Amino acid sequence: MIAKLSSWIKDFSENDAAMPKSDHDWAETIAALLIEAAMADGDIDSAERANIAAALTSQLDLTADEVDSIIERGLVAHEERVEIHSITREIRSQTEPEERIAIMQMAWMVVLADGETHSYEAQLMRRLAGLLYVDDVDSGKAAKLAKARLGL
Image (cartoon, rainbow, N blue to C red; front, side):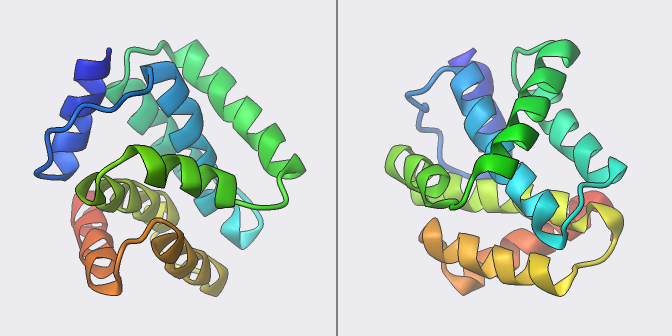
């Protein structure tokens, strides 16, 4: 499973370092971050949810039911969460810079899923970049690559 996640990260970055967490743990962490991105404008629409589910289902050794459960738990956690620092700190402490850029690209894909960027989403993405120690240039490149992957 770790090899599959590492392969997924390699699709987004040049770094081939293995990640120390299990796929399920990473799915929970990544889903939490992606849900925060999706909910920045106050609502998660079907396209955003589908992008989160597709990323988790296609890239990790999880069933559709497991992914749905992870997303549902993530939505509940989002309602209870008052900060995102714990999520970004966990990602930052266990990933390399290239992997964090890839994660930013995933977040951009969720934010851009509806074809537009709300001002709250743009603000959150700037904040996430800072919290993940991704510079503005790399965040901009991640956004551009996300647009290209989405055909925008």
